[in-house]
Image (cartoon, rainbow, N blue to C red; front, side, top):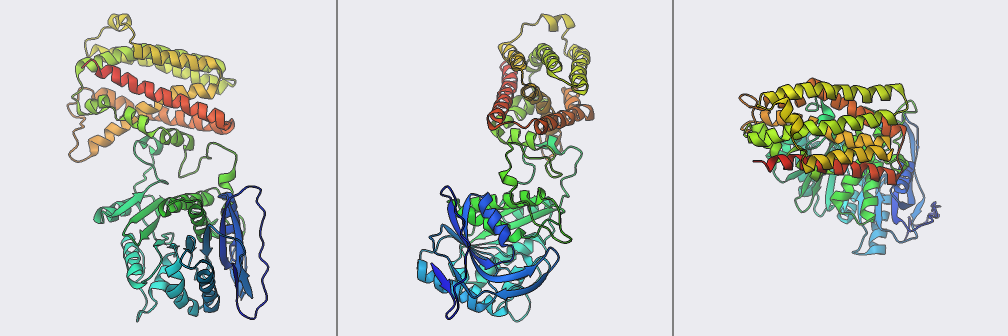
Length: 558
């Protein structure tokens, strides 16, 4: 494909050889933020060919001048295309003409980022280009990705006055609808970026409830059964960045992520559109490509190191770091714990929302089931304390030895509480001691000791924390259920109130927090290889399954 304006010289385009066979993506744009695109394409496994339409003189604070280029060309077949800064109507017409001539009706997935203004507020698009973009380029596009200001500018086209300001999620939804009403034919979808719109989770819930056709992607937020990850943090009022994907088939998706207070946002728009183009080139659906692009961009901002006096760049290479576990960040302080839960969501949910837990929360759990459970838990705690003894032996610093030893002392103290609690249900200390261990107890306890004897300290921590963290999540889940209107869960009159208060209370939740902090620090201090990481996750999965088996055992008694 050769793209140039009549009577002009050919412009040199840089093509970089790639040793493998990645997907190929062409970008037609200004030199503004081209480095962001290049790094994004590379980090996402794609080969980029740039056709430069305009050169921009800029630094981290401001843009000083804009120069249109003499010609553009791309000479290799592409899997996806992206346009960005097109400057004027003549360049935009040349792009449209070349796409139609070269591809006919089979234009590859095309992401049109309608850049009108820079981050610093400098105009990057002449007014004559807007008409050409709307009437001729948009109908060829798979996706257009305007931000708030760009959407307002585009939607003002052909109107007697300015388009009403976009300041709420309701405004964003209406703007998306207006986009498809006003621009016919238009792109297959619009991604209205909400970086300049303030929103909270309550706003997202309100809009999605009012419009059932809207689905919500919460990849960047804490999900179901993750209460332990934000104890002591009010997440209800956290400011979010909300992007809205509106497809011409009527599908609407909100992508919500925590807002990051950062100056490392230079090139955010081109990074997002480039990452989406990579996903489309690799065969992802539009929704999946958009989700992947939004996640990549979010992590690029969150992992950036600020430099420059104004808006510095993102860290585009965050996904290429050779680590299995992400670093802790303010919006995700326990990344390893979150990964463990996410990668075992089904069994984790079966564990923390087991019928045993639900019935206990409602106060209707059969007494014989609970009695059998506490008897077996008494014997399990012996294995648990012995495993911590092995952990102390495997530890090489006094603080680590002290931590493991304190846990053993806490278990010994808990046994006294446990015995007193059992007495309320008519279970004597002699009866506790003489109760025969169940198969589930022996299996779980034996597995703990086996893991301990294998020698990997962090692997043993994995096994022990499945119990600690799981009971913490159960306690918080019950409290959350009790607070729901019309819930069957209750505290008042619940015969198991003391048990619920123990595991949802501040003392136990503090132990959960310390446990999560311990495993996060250990994992970062001794980063695992992919094989070792897989081994850790398998231990967590098995212990979660064994915990569920413990509940199963108790329910068999009812």
